[in-house]
Length: 206
Image 1: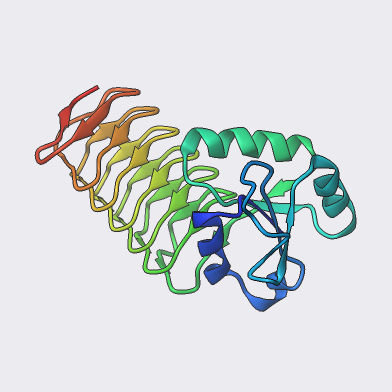
Image 2: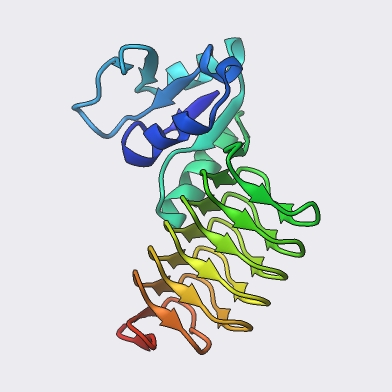
């Protein structure tokens, strides 16, 4: 499998992978100049599209997104999908996911996450450590859920939303596409598309 990115979050995905995937694992980073040729001395870091094409053709066509920003995740999904890759999920074993929850393809879920029955996550989401998603929550595509945030019953989250660490979204709140919820915010009412809210109770600042 190829992990897109070789910095922060990309490294954390390593903790969720079984040994079989680690045998052929590689990273991709054509931006940062301080990345070594092999991450941790083990995993090749590809830097050119030609290398990616060779990897997809000769090793594996599977890739996952090792970056957090929702818009960047979407952009890179499109790029590597067009190169012939297949977006896959990574789900840590130390999670509690309800039998009747639905998880979209290409989603990254780290350890300590709890997802209740009736919850639905769209394609390409990032669910960080210790996130709690309770019953009947609906989450769109390429959403970023930062560590320790909590989404309570019947919350609806639009595409490309970013929710900060420790934020709490109260029941039945609607957060529209592209909104950003600040760390520690307590959201008690609906949030408009592309707006930024912070505080307790959360207020719009942009």
